[in-house]
Image (spheres, rainbow, N blue to C red):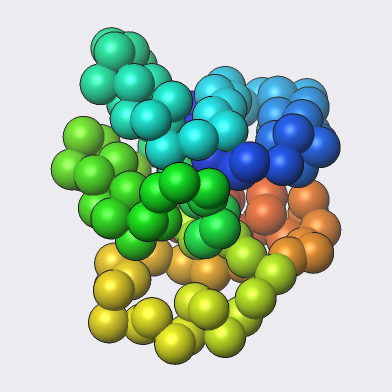
Length: 119
């Protein structure tokens, strides 16, 4: 399975990438929306999960989520944020089938969610 992690915090991208690769996933990373869009359109790789931080600089994460899902209609979207209210205040802007992980979350929680959604 292939996961795209979109987060402006390098440490979060690196930790998720290292852990998920250790347990057998292919992990792509992007720090900005434009980079994520390029990965989704330039690669011929099927993306199964998109982990998208809600606080991406210089971009609207809700619009970005829609664009990434348009490019990968079979992917499952997981929004991430330390600000739970940000997610729920904008609920009508969120893709209904998306999940939400509140930061900080454990890597086991992330793995469990991905395994649950992929079964």
